[in-house]
Length: 146
Image 1 (cartoon, rainbow, N blue to C red):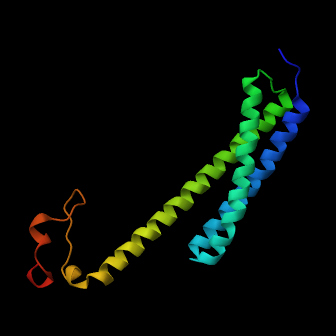
Image 2 (image 1 turned 90 degrees about the horizontal axis):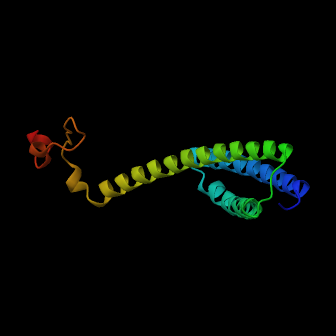
Image 3 (image 1 turned 120 degrees about the horizontal axis):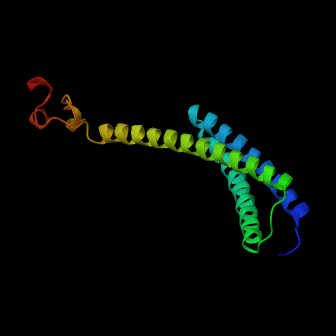
């Protein structure tokens, strides 16, 4: 078994926690910008987010390499690793929330563009069946015939 390099590991984990906190803040700012539809602020955050993700990726790869070599984490480093994993879990959930918001906004924009591009196709009333699909018998009829 190799000697324990826990001071280096502990410092790396603490650095990872700091970067994870920064990523969490960036994701919160990103959500605020998306909610306010401030695309300039959203774009400005992307480079800082990419840089933070690059640091985190490098850290995780380095720590994974140490684990593969058989280097054990001592108790303080293990506690820091738990905190790091918890922070990264929060970041994952914040990223998912932002992704859902972006996707819903894109669907809304695409639907609006579709209406503007082909207004004659949207003159009728759309009626859905219990499965959430457009009713086949009303699909071809216009508003005046419904």
